[in-house]
Length: 395
Image (cartoon, rainbow, N blue to C red):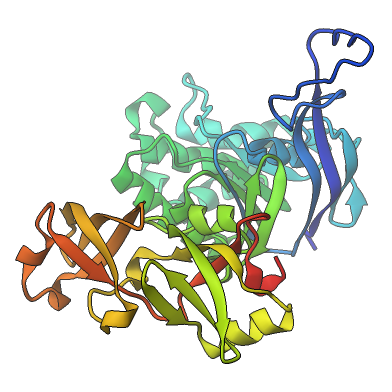
């Protein structure tokens, strides 16, 4: 069992210089809430249980603490507080080499003077594995990653994608219980990145290990992860399957981060008439679906000013007059099967994805032309203005 459990994990980087003493009665100004008297709080109260053989993805913007969390699991960063368990054993003070983990970095970190075979074999030689076993593992990893034909080449003779496969191969030859990957595809171009995502999906079917993967790319998170951990300011915002995060975001941050193009947001009102919740936006009023009605009712949500979220693919150019929202077209982008329409509506930028097969007259989307759109009550997301949490879940 390669289960990984993080309990209340915390990482504080102490101040590099002594803090000046405040004068009596002087208030301390904290420009960033993550700066405390102890130091910079990079990760705080982080709880997560990763199941055996699960592929978990830590995702979030730069500086959110995801790589720091990964490095604490690897033992490359000291844990300031909390407990880390791997395979049921407390690992806080265990050296990285004794944690039975392997790590793939953003930079390939290959030895330039060694062949691919020697790069793959090197970590096994350090462990004193016999030559026959080294050869078996190296060739097995090369076969899994389709790099057998490159075993006698030096890294400089390989493409970026091939070098990253070698870096992954060097990690898996050790047959680790946990494989850590820190933004391994960020140095590749878009086409190679798509190809390598597919290779990683295939890889996890072939090797018997637990994956923890870090990325700032939500497309990678959605396509690779069994579950996604959304992070912001060192705090775990939501853990769920890709579909759960997409359909039921816990707060405004997750709603805006997951999904491409990102969700549209509007200042709106949640109203209740004849026992039914509806969202009022401009002159339009749209009744929410029975499921959303039940969720809001269960939590006793009162009518209030809200932030309304609707995904671009859920906006429609057809509907009844009383349900229509009006705006002006700013830009259109032809994407082949769909047109991405950028418009200004209700004082906010709006993106709509309009399938070309549904667009009978493209002239209605010329720049500067008026546009009217609506959405169904089942796809509306209602967030508290005060807490930014999804009101369907008690925000």
